[in-house]
Length: 368
Ligand code: GLA
Image (cartoon, rainbow, N blue to C red; front, side):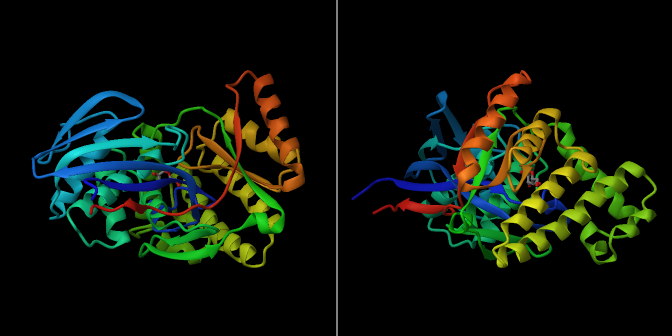
């Protein structure tokens, strides 16, 4: 007999396809091995009392919570309660403890990991049968409408649908997910995760500004989303009067093509080509979408100069992490050079780890 449920969900790294999700484009994330775990002891009360290994004290979330009631880290928990209930689902009260190994503020989707772990635990407690795409949409609603960050659906889908040794090709036109084998180690290549420790923020204005730019560009072309002009190529953007909006849209169209090219290259086991696509994606985020920083550019450029097959910032931007594909025997040299160069430039020390595609959200301990 156990009186509790344990449910875990991972953070994610996006291999390629950045800011494409809210433009109905394509992305190619993996779930990370690092996870957030929620232990829920359900009861029949009308409150969820939440604690976390990272925060002092406890937060009482009323089951009839509404946006604005709870702020700070527990807003993600309250947001899931609210989004589940406003989608017509039953939510049980109880006590909930959160532990996490996903770095916060590093662009690794600690928020999606938290939302999806909470969602899984609450759905299990109430015996709800909701498919993973709908669960992802509920978690996204929590983030968009309760927390107030206007993010797309990639992080939640990656956290819920991840599979070991696979990337997820997501088509945001219909939110379909296709598994793409991703096992660089089998080809003697490592995926390095370089954390700049420069915090990034989504609720901040820049993410919303990029989103608004893309929406204006689509509207100028008379379509609902940039996806609808994808097959016309970038010359269609001559019809976007604002040069900044046109450049933002150019990133989206070229990035969608790079996702398709990366999937083909992975199919051939050609990590040299994937590396070049990483570089091109980074350049597009730097020059056209303008979401990188000098610090992040230095990390990506240094990794490539030191012998990486390619490197790019991953996630929403303005800080966070760079990923690099590196032949295994060059990993130490690349990691050392990046760490030293960053220190010499006066930035916060970078952390370099090896990572791989891990499992998606799962029930660790059922209620019995
Ligand atoms: C953040 C958002 C995602 C996505 C990425 C950029 O992680 O949460 O929805 O837009 O940025 O690709």
